[in-house]
Amino acid sequence: AMTTAIRPEVRIAERAGFCYGVRLAIDKAKHARDEGKEVTTLGQLVHNPGIKADLSDRGIKTADLADQVEGGTLVIRAHGVPAGELEQVRGKPELEVIDATCTWVVQSQKAAAELAAAGYTVCIIGHEDHPEVKGVRSYAGDKHVVVDDMDRSTWERVPHTKKIGVLSQSTILPYKLEEFAAFCLRRCHDLRVVNTVCPVTLTRQADSVVLAGEVEAMIVVGGKNSSNTKELAVKCADVCPATIHVADADELEAEHRDWLSGKASIGITGGTSTPEVDLEEVRDRIYALVG
Ligand code: SF4
Image 1 (spheres, rainbow, N blue to C red):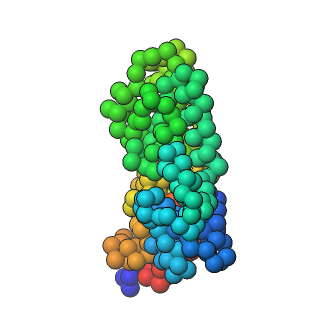
Image 2: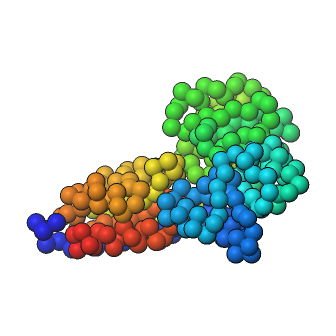
Image 3: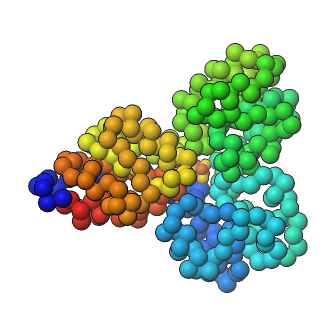
């Protein structure tokens, strides 16, 4: 770091930080805990080490399966859960359920149910193993299919049929939904598309891409298993080839120290599950390393 005299200009994307769906779920869990309740979340509220530690310090527990919780207060996270699972936990007499499913996800679930009831074969584009998709598809009827936005070969799962209803996981890139809708149109007579790409994701992407276009290098901060963070990194790399994806400031320091030096301007953004403080920490670390 001593070999260069450049102090980089570091900027954080405008509308980065938690989306309100995730923030609300965290607030609901904390609030219930502050009231003295025994709070458990069904799955991690957010894939972020700092937040996970904070929640566990407050005494908020996490369970992977609904079967593991019989009493106290259970928080359903923003991604939502399959219909059967919600029914199961609501049926437990000793358990209070706080449903923090994001309103946008609830809309997708409702759209899936309505399309299926109206005789449409529901086709969902997203990641099969993503919890949100697992939840939404549980409302989509017997004939539904899920295809992967990153793997075109899976699109062949779409049947040639009369009526197709298209939905997407909330965090996929809008152009993927557009391409998939066009693909489905060639396989049916009556196509309905419900645009279930989350607007928060769109504004975040838009701001991040604008910033990526204005800087020499871009750092996307977020969990390596966060699909929207990965996609954000791809999107930024389109306009700023020197884009890297790191989990946090420590990874940046350990893996990309040399990469940092000599950069005149660096942009920072993060995924849905990356809090503002993580972005600030990365900024401060850059200054500490090369400032
Ligand atoms: S990304 Fe959008 S849909 Fe997903 S939890 Fe956040 S606000 Fe809700």
